[in-house]
Length: 159
Image 1 (cartoon, one colour):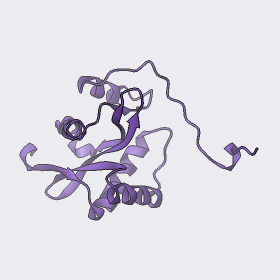
Image 2: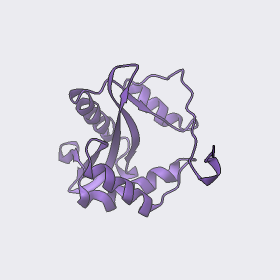
Image 3: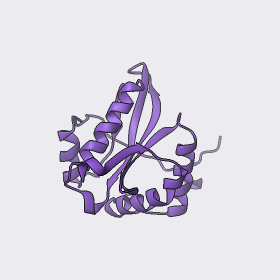
Image 4: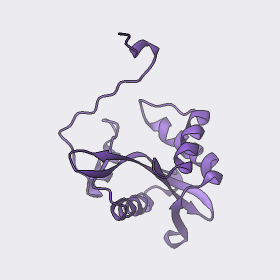
């Protein structure tokens, strides 16, 4: 099976399958909910503009069975391009096959060859399996504490 899996950048024809994979991912996360219309809009924007990011798709017999998205920014601390690993999911039928490591390895290689100096990611605090996976793939825990502010009408300030 390993040899029959291909990894390549996503295209607009992949969006429906990517929304299904994101549905699997968001069912496992506490902070997010699947909303295919919102995910479709975001995926379309990323795929259309490679300066925003790259979405990698793992395909088995032309069916999307895994995905990983990198979003790009510039770090003043590192003086160059960096990536945020925004989403990574492998279909449950393909977990524990090495596909996740292969997909992440591919994304790390592309990030490096395109000048990224760092990849940052977030995991749920309770998702110990994901944390162990990322540690095995060379990631380290950070002393930084993630904080979020969702921008809604309630968070807007007026001067």
